[in-house]
Image 1 (spheres, one colour):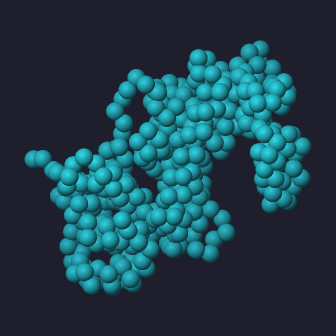
Image 2: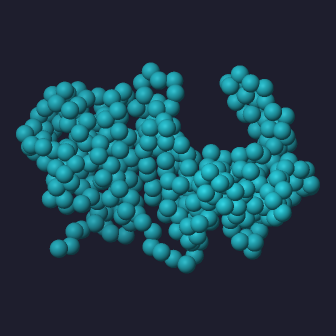
Image 3: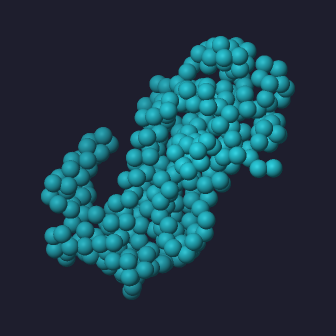
Length: 367
């Protein structure tokens, strides 16, 4: 189903996936998205305009013309711009409501949480201007956490609440002491990829470990598991705590590709590549807090699930054009990002429920 068709012909059903009209109006008024109803008669109409503009790739003028031709609203592109700039906090609130609906039912079994982020650039920019932090539940194949920040919002596990029965899977960008300690003290677990120098590791006696020395002791196609400790950080009040380091030697073909990436990254930074980086490219290093009965091979197999969140980002960028950010105005840019993400959740829910057991394909409100 195309997004523009959904917002034109399936709008009443999409609205059934959101709070009732009275709550939408109250939330829009409280957040300042609607101060007076003149050309836009309700919060649901304003939401529809915001989603059409954000998700369908229309310009402000095209969105205004679309609304006029469908008899939805009559306003100029300038008026629409002013309306949309006021929507950012309200759309963020609706996004939080949708994510709260997806909160999992607590269970005693382990639940995987995939964590990653993607960067977006404004028109004409050569650097990352916005960053979207995403949590993904592979069991339900659904997004369960979204946070939008500017370029200063770094990737960190501290952004995510992890329950005691959850296992967070994340790549090397999240291998930092603060994030690992955040998950550890919450009672959750993690499997996080690291490199040879990201996290300072010691043995039980407190002596600094050389990850490459440990890796060299392994035979080919043999996974190793080593008990290690993360060194304390007194400035951030992080004590030393124990983990496991899982190491596996890559095939020569996979190692060659990783070394090529390392050389390209060094060339982009106009620096020489460290020989230890080239050697470490021949291994996979994982830090985990999972108990010993979860073997090294099982930890490595769990980490393979992380690619599901990469596919989720690809779907968002290909289907909803998440990577396209046509606005330089910060307020409008946030509206677009929140609108795209909210539209993604609505269309995801609508599609899954349309294919579900109810013949009519949408939930009924019970009074």
